[in-house]
Amino acid sequence: MPERIYNFSAGPSTLPEEVLAQAAKDIVNFNNKGMGLIEMSHRSKDFIAVADECEANLRELMKIPANYKVLFLQGGASTQFAMIPMNLLGEGKSATYLNTGVWAKKAIKEAKLFGKVQVAYTSEESTFNHVPKDSDYTVDPASEYLYFVTNNTIYGTQFPAMPKCEKMLIADMSSDILSREFDITPFGIVYAGAQKNMGPAGVTVVIIREDLLDRSPENLPTMFKYKTHADNGSMFNTPPCFSIYVVGLVLKWLKKLGGVAAMEKINKEKAALLYNAIDSSDFYRGHAQPGSRSNMNITFNLPTPELEAQFIKEAAALGMDGLKGHRSVGGCRASIYNAFPKAGVEALVAFMKEFEKKNS
Ligand SMILES: *Cc1c(COP(=O)(O)O)cnc(C)c1O
Image (tube, rainbow, N blue to C red):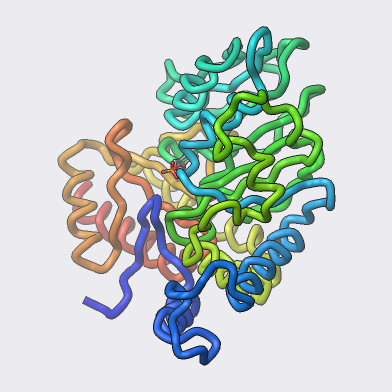
């Protein structure tokens, strides 16, 4: 087994090797302070500098305007499913949701606890193999917001462009944040669990338009109000220090690489290699419809479940791990987030050709 294998895991997922090497050093002795980063007070000068730099780099990379707050929260992306409607809905208020997969469905379930929910579109009957076009649904004018999931990690679908709509947008970008450029100004909230495309598990980045902070009902528990975290620079209580620090390292790596535009170009190239391999063969079938294909998670099937199991096993023996599809769809899934190297995609494509020759 080589020292580092190609890790196609959907999340937590592969990180840049130089980030891991730096983190390994800093965990023992940070800034020559004689103590490790995770032993330091979150109120220390050193850690505050880490958090500030992380936020500044995220603002720069995503072109986040000054009227948005950047929060580093805990509880995973799943806590946001509830926190968003808890803060923005309530008695008599409603929101529109697009049901494009398991993560959207879970968000819909939570939103129903706090207000009226219109599900304007669902692709469930086709095993979520596509996302809607703007013309496929209507947004109720009474809605507070339109909620959607930009990239559906499990099914391998992605909105090719952000929906255009009169209402403010709210998006779960857990599996494609920082993978492509977009204009954040139509959004009220953008959020992402870090563990797919920007760091380790433990921190959820929430980018929220400032004027929304005063909409929360008075009786919300302190920790569930966005305003609590915004007013305290995400340090109302102890933040997930290590995760924030590693996200900071990943952002520096991304800046060095040329930023989001450069990353987007590489991501398109990587995904095209795999989709070409799928499209040029009758042996492999892509799950996602061509207009909805994700550049992050590439889902595909082989002729039989037995061949899929064998494919996954043989790939793992060659140092390509994590190719098993999510239990709800089966098949194979190659997650090729920002940090996943192009050489790993090339290795998988070569293996696919070999495997097909031997087994068809
Ligand atoms: C993984 C994932 C989640 C769940 O994230 P947690 O941090 O585990 O709660 C939510 N949404 C999307 C799109 C995901 O890929």
